[in-house]
Length: 245
Image 1 (cartoon, rainbow, N blue to C red):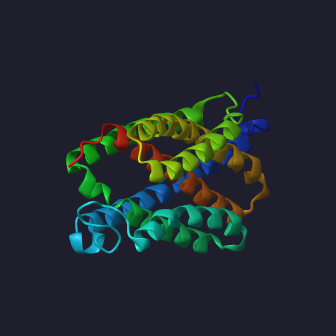
Image 2 (image 1 turned 45 degrees about the horizontal axis):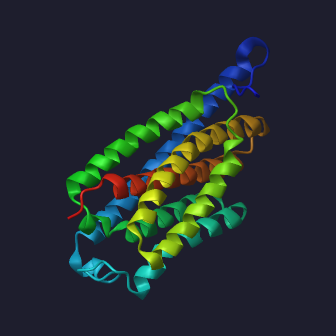
């Protein structure tokens, strides 16, 4: 397998420059992702703990979404596809603003969990997800193995999950939801390591060009990918281990 490592040149001068730049790049990725997470959970908590606000999107008793709730549920998916298609037309500042707006919409779509699950179980699953995410991302960053081959398989898995979840909206099968949740955790665990290595390798491949605008947008796209890995892993773990109200 191909070995991935930081660019090396004579005298170690280029190595130091790349290492320093890579650390700054990864810090920006994780920092942007963390802000997005804070926005998401702040919006989700504010709406989910307010019956009046949650009632705008869902029935307060059954939690069944109304028309606006369905729009909010699928809006993040549409925004992700739109962001990927149009990021080259955005400035770095516009891309970052779009990401934070996306995080807020995601919070609206997740607000129901604060009614469906106990606060303690949400906190426990969030902690478990954080520990798992940190370990998987660290593996993706430090491994010398080329795991880029995982990409096609994992993306196919995500597509299959989306299709199965849409079908199960109508079937409402607990068994199918259980299987989806297990597969979802495994797929997004793999994507966490894969995306981390890809962010690192993309930086190394392009840093020599000195295109700061591209690097800034690359960091935001990387933050979005890792954010989605975390959120999806959290939601699937919550379905498996969360204690319902």
